[in-house]
Length: 206
Image 1 (spheres, rainbow, N blue to C red):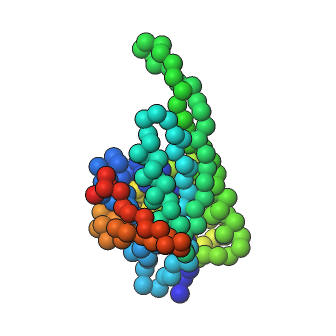
Image 2 (cartoon, rainbow, N blue to C red):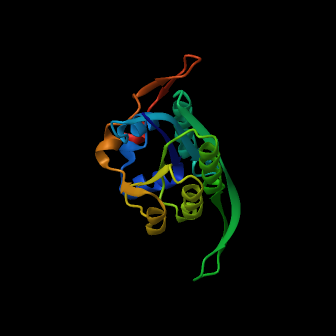
Image 3 (cartoon, one colour):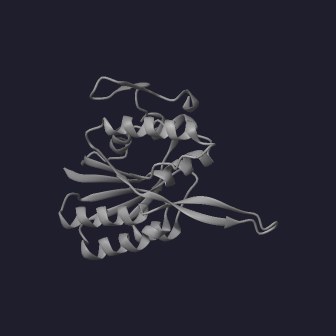
């Protein structure tokens, strides 16, 4: 059996789902999704999920709570490893009126993905990597991985409504994540943590 690792660019996937107004698929079981994408001669070994915790402000308390609930639910899956980046405070200015405000930009996800993929390749932990992202910044590490390990395959799996021509060309192959796989790969409405606490699917995601 060929060993497969899945690398999920969390915010890239989230914004793809949001652009399609597919909020009902946010409660995603990444292990089930990974298994749904396998070929008959493949076996899922691990899922790496890359994200950053939302920075709390006066307007996003509910968003932060929903994200925390989802991350806790993912943490109950033994084959999922969560990797955290961070948000960087960044000043922005309106080009029309000159108004200024502070915004936040997610950082480190592409670097974390590149490092993990290359580390796993050097340690020979996979035969095929499924990269769920459409971030063109990952083009160079994918090219480098293929040059160093010509017998390993990297497949770009584009989130809905997102695509990178460069990343697709750098990989061994590419395809877009379909709605059927998302629909069939949802976590149970109630997920129990190791301490017995029950996490409930946010009603906003129904």
